[in-house]
Structures are given as structure tokens and as C-alpha cells.
Amino acid sequence: MVRYQIRARGLKDESLLQALLAVPRHLFVPEAYRGEAYEDYPLPIGEGQTISQPYIVALMTAAAEIKPGDKVLEIGTGSGYQAAVLSRLTDQVFSVEIRETLATRAARLLESLDFKNIRVRWADGYFGWPEEAPFDAILVTCAANHIPPPLFQQLREGGRLVIPVGSTVFFQTLTLVRKTGGQPVIKQLLDVRFVPMVGEIEKNKR
Image (cartoon, rainbow, N blue to C red; front, side, top):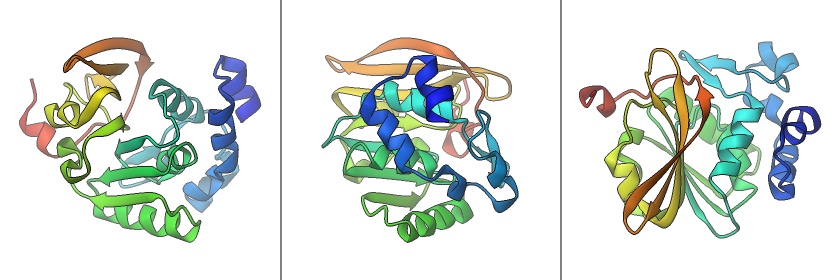
């Protein structure tokens, strides 16, 4: 997976590659799909949600420029895989999941696999995790039709927000938002397709 799907496509940061090698992806997918766990496409994890394809996990992680000591927030815990990868790059990972079943399952799995530097919360990710802000990086693993203001507010100056923005029905653009002088500096990365963010954001469609 790492050699052919990640490194061969231009992502060559050694710390990122080692993080991917350190996390047993097959343990984060349902047993029925474990034979496909290392293929380069998303897989269902229940409740209409998916685990992202390995390349997208790697690309989002690389775009967020995670460094040792960074405080990182993930929106959309899902299976817990992205959080596990992040936890191999820094020692402070916070993850929010709106679906109670997935939040509980991911927290138990991460604990059983001894990922001790990840905290999982069952809540609406639109509001981030204000008690733990500011964050050096925020990764959003669900599609939004706008950048949630609370997430940008919770970024540290110089912080990076990686989020798929666009239609929550069709395709989105994976977007990197850097907080510079308190203002967003936006870079579009590539077209993607994610499951939609739900909750408060549905009241704020525009």
C-alpha cells in the first residue's frame, strides 16, 4: 500500500510513510472487508460512513504538515484510522464524531490497540473542541458546503485546516486553509468525494 499507492504518487515524507506503516489498517474495517483493507478505495464501516482510501488519508495528513508537538483536531472519527495515523506524528490528537455508535466503537478500538494519545468525543464536529483550542492543525473527513467558522476560529495563527468543500451530494474540492494574520489563505488541492457533514451545518446551508 505505502510503496505503490502513496510513495509512487509523490508523497515521500518519511515520517508520514512510517506512520502509515505503523497503523494496521485492516483492524479499522469490518471483518467482511479486511481482505480489501489495503486497496486504494474507500470501504464502508457502517451507518452510511466510510474509511477513506489510503491515498486520501495520506494526502490530507501531508497537507496538514503535522509536526511533533502539534495539537491536532480531527472532525469525523469514523473508524478511528485517520486519528491513529495522526497519533504517530504527534502526541496530541483530538477527534470528534457525531454518531455515538461510531464514536464509542472507535474509542474502544483505539484504546485496545494502545493508542493512548487520542481523545475521542461524541459531539457535533461543526463546533470543534473549543475547550482544547487552539489547534495547530484541523482535518475534516466529511464534506461541508462552507468552512465552519468555529473551526477556523479554533486554529492557531499559522495553523492549517484541511477540509473537503463543495456540494455535499456530488463532488468537493479538498481545500487547505492556512490562518495568516488572522485571515484564511486558501489553496485548492484536488477533487474528492466525501460523505456529508451532518448536524448544525445542515441549518447553515448556503
